Every structure is written in structure tokens, then in C-alpha cells.
Image 1 (spheres, rainbow, N blue to C red):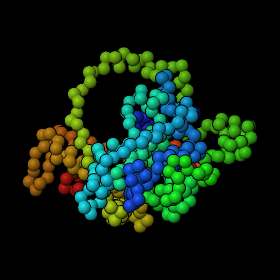
Image 2 (image 1 turned 180 degrees about the horizontal axis):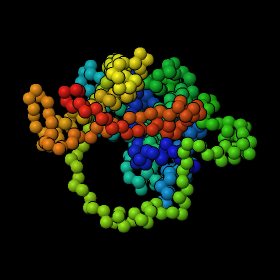
Image 3 (image 1 turned 135 degrees about the vertical axis):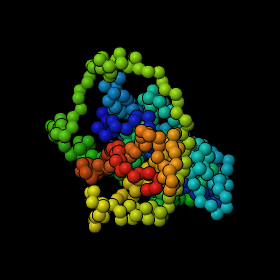
Image 4 (image 1 turned 90 degrees about the horizontal axis):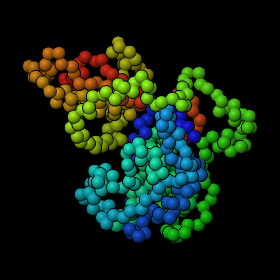
Length: 383
């Protein structure tokens, strides 16, 4: 099963990882948690009926570099873990639980992962892994990780929502649709759940792949279709690295000195802050270079947030660049001839609606184009 053109654009070792926290109740304990592992395992089994490609393994052609999914049926990984602490003990009294409060900043709540090309293509690395962590109070953390080259964020959260729907269908006594209430009925057996109703999901292109929507000739015609705007060159049998470049690669300069370590930071934005940020960005949006706000201007929340982080990073780079010197009035400039730090900006565009992709498309449809700003005054005084 060859992955699509947009799937090929994501670096193969990059994952998507999210941790969901489900509080316990006075009656839950570490051995009787809010979400029992057997129930979760049953829900995942039914989820995979609608997403069979998640049971395979990533394969990268050694000659062309083309990525595909093979070994269908190998399965996903479900890990179980316990934490001796209660959820409330991780934060000060009356404080909101945030990512840095979790064990190892949340990393301890995710299944093991080895970010190397050899590992992500091996049998030991599934496309989707889930870790169930039960806290002493009965609260549960579900850590889900998926290979980004197979799913984008839109598809990832579609899978999570479908898992929630399947779980609720197994335990109909659940009265809310919030994912924070994913738990079985109080009287539901914890070890042997009752036989579930049919999975309430419609697999992607179910009619076309199930035999009832298309004839064999129609399926062959659909697979033979070649889009007019792009094509993939068939490189079977050719070397992954052209021969004319081999000598240059062998004569490449030694590995440069390692750069300083990257230290991460967690920035939390409330819903109100994101709304205010989007409103401010939309109010200053322009249709062109005339600096006149467009009456129907629209800026997505993601773009507004990305632009904020981008400008702050640029400000930090300007402050820390070597050879800078202060001018009167607080403005800064580098030594003569010194270029400002990179102004490259990486954003994302969701092509699901733009390409009219089928409903519930479960692969990558997000493209991340790099943009370089040519604004001459993108300095500290304008941020």
C-alpha cells in the first residue's frame, strides 16, 4: 500500500504524540481505574476494523525512498503502566494540571519510541501505539503516538474521536459525549466486557473497497487514474543516489561541530487568549501591500499563533546574535555586512477542502510550505 504524495513530505521518524487525562472518582483505584485496560483493548480492536492500515508497518524503498505500508495485520501496541502518585499530588492546591506537571513532562506516559529510520521501519515499531497509565487515585492517562508520515493532526484526532465513539458504544450507560468521561458503567465487568454492538464507524471509502460500490473494472479504472497536476517518477531499479553525485557525497566535509542543545519551553494559551490573538491578527490583515485592512479578512487561529511564536523567536535571535551593537534609542544592528538571523516561517495548509478529498480521509492532507519574510523592519522595535 503506497502512501500518498503528501505523506511522502513528512520526515519519516517524526511522530504525533498526545496525552489525554481522565480523572478518577471516589470509587476508582489503581487496580480499578476509570478506564480498564480490557475495555480499552476491546475498543481498540473494533477501531482497527475501520482503520486496517494502522495494523501494518512502515516500509521505505531502499532504491527510490518511496514509503508504503506493508505487513498488514501486525497490529498496534498497547502498553500498561501504573503511577504510585495521585493526580492531585502532581500540582499545587487549586492549580490547573499542565504538561510540565506530568511525569517526565508527559513523556513517561507515552509508549517507548526509537526515532531512527531503522526502528520506524522495523516490526517492533507500530504505526499507532497506546499507553494506559493508571494513577493511585484511579485516574487514567492515555498516551497515543502515531507516525506522522501516515496521519496528519486532522486524521489523528479523527481516530481519537472514533475511539471515543467505539468506547461509548461498548458502555451505553455513559451519559455524556465528552471524551473526558470515557469510562464504563459502574456495573460493567472489568475483565470480560459484554459482546459489543457493531462498531459505529464507516471506514474510509467503505463502498469502494467493500465490493458493493464499484465493479472490478471500475476499481481498475480508478486506480489507473493519473492526476494532471503532479506525477511520481518511476525510479525502480535506479540508485537512490545518482552516480554523478556519489563522489561528491563521499568527499563531503566532516560533520560540523554540534550546535548548542535545544531547551524546550511549554507555553499555554487559554481559549480567550487565542480568540483575542486571532481577532488582533484579523484586524490587521491586508489583502496586499496597500496596508489597508480587508473588510472580509480572515486569519486562522493556527496562523495567528504561529506568527506570534515566529516573531518572538526572531526577536530572541536578534538579541543573541554575535557581534551585535546597541544604537541610541534602543535599536540594534549587527556589525557591518552582517545579515539578520533567518526569517523563515513554516506554516501549514489543510488541503482537505481545497482538494475535495473524500470524507474521513485518514492520511496526510496538510502541507507545510516555508515562507521567507522580506519585511525590512522585522526587528525588536516592531515586535
